[in-house]
Figure 1 (tube, each protein chain N blue to C red):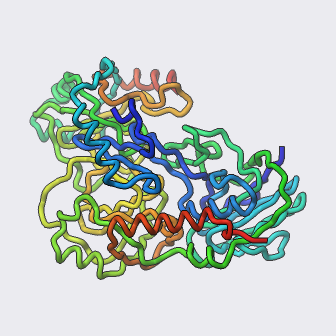
Figure 2: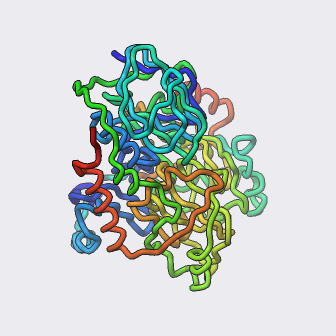
Length: 194
Length: 313
């Protein structure tokens, strides 16, 4: 809504699960003024017409070197590898918001049986394309960054690309389905998409 | 077109302007100069619009050749600059004659020095800004820090022969601070009175592991009252987040846009530029102010930056 009807002086928006951080130019307006405007927006929240949700399929090669935590997560929940893959790929996830780094989509909700806490000690470097889970969330790391999510696999898809019309593969409100692929297919797709 | 030849890049030198605002919904943080006040003043010195792109050097400067000459200014920290071996002053515009070489060394004061050139550095913009966003490899010069042998284009400039210097008043008032003023953070009440006292009464040391994404601090641990976990939410520039373990991290220009750690405080806008001059092992303290004070300090700073008496011949 704030994107469709911009407020003069508002400089940036950071959506979260159940919050929106609104950054404004403190030279142009005071906190109370922004708050009053946003309260009016809140009252009209139910009237907003959302664009139709897209369904985006993301190929994932599970386990092995691509998913270093996969075996442990499956074992933790008493599942075979096949069951864990099937479960993670069985759900149509919702993009709640993008945050952390460019193109990182917070997806939910993970099937109850896969809910796993974050790693106690985050990795210093998670490779780009890694598909991870944390609590009841799942997501894909667009870039090599530090990260504490448990890694189940990797996608050859480019989540964020500067020289593409649609910079971010995913947007708020999109539906996402993970499609299991083999290591050979991963290599092939990666070549095609680079 | 006039160019700059990078003979030595220095430790970590990137093209920066004032960043890109408005792309938080894609997870893209603004980036931009770590010490935006210095970049703005440097640009004013060479007659540019204050948001023109310049070079941000970190801790150790580079060596640059100007085959066609250029009008330059250095702003921020003193990196012991010399033009063809002759020392040049900070905060003063000067001319490099064709083929002259500017050499910078290790810092003698804070973390960053800006090289501004009349006409600005010309790069392909990304989302409206020339700023390098290192993590995602976009913006700036090929989305990365400069390397030996890079050739940077200088933009076209409207010719003014002025080479002014910065006023003593501006120099004094823009001096980077080691006592950072903060307003209460959105989760201040997660921290009991005793923890807040620890935070405000102790000095913190800037950790080695510090970059444009975040400034890690070492010192007294700040304990949370409850075991509760925060649902991920938007975080702002200068947020002081306290992860498990209790050692605060200041979110900086190339910050993550959302985070799940509680925030005890937020550095005020008027002190952002001071963050850009913090070096590893520097000692800092925090001083709590209210929103109204934070706002008037920003207004004062902007008035000075826009005033006629900022520069003189």
